Length: 314
Ligand code: G3H
Ligand code: 13P
Ligand code: ZN
Image (cartoon, rainbow, N blue to C red; front, side, top):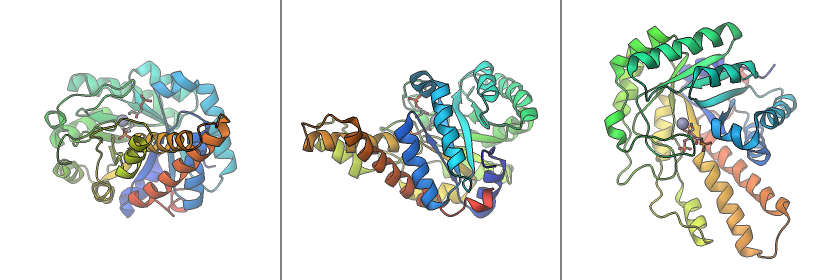
């Protein structure tokens, strides 16, 4: 079994008021940290790969690592997901490569075009038992390969459009822009999410799973450690964890987290370098980094409410 698509996971998450964590992977240590946490906490898991991750680590290496994760954890349902696929061709490639879920992010295109591209991906993915996530509205923030809008509040998803979008495109889940953004600098002042948008779409599309991107909380403890050990991340700010938990109890069934893993890894490596300046064995700093990722993910699984839910998603 347990390489699965996201259908059952989302069905259970929606019904039982939690969200499944979708964690970005870029190398072996990050993947191991995630799976160690999930195996201990018995949670369902979505491992996602961005185009940036693919270009960095090569898909064959990442697939090899993920295959081991799946083989060694028969009681954990794992879905492998393309994060922010930009074209039909990229999505097709990931479907052909055996991924169980793909995101087509045509959210920067006009509404009709977004529907058409998404529909084309759905028509290719569904006969192959692969789920499709689409996006409506636009997120802010700047990632390596994902450039968002500057003023997030102007690009919030429209609940009425969401209904038309889902009906016409046939997508399985929808990422909705609701005030979050990618990266470590999400808000300039008080963090605020558009819960009315989540609520509005939830009411219009009962039972339909929504996705929240840009969901890292940028925990102060980790930013402080980075700054203490020579980093420079002033004014970093994320989504408060209470807001994530609240959204997870609503129609949000998948929560994307990357930045918080990066912060945990970076903080730990900086600490080792600062405290042991003579250290040059990569295992001595990547090892503690991997442990920091594990603790971060364990914590997140409780924030999302999916700890202990692996069994019901199989
Ligand atoms: O959505 C963005 C993710 O954090 C992936 O970032 O494109 O730098 O790999 P990346
Ligand atoms: P963060 O940058 O908040 O971790 O968001 C990650 C994400 O949305 C990946 O698609
Ligand atoms: Zn994203």
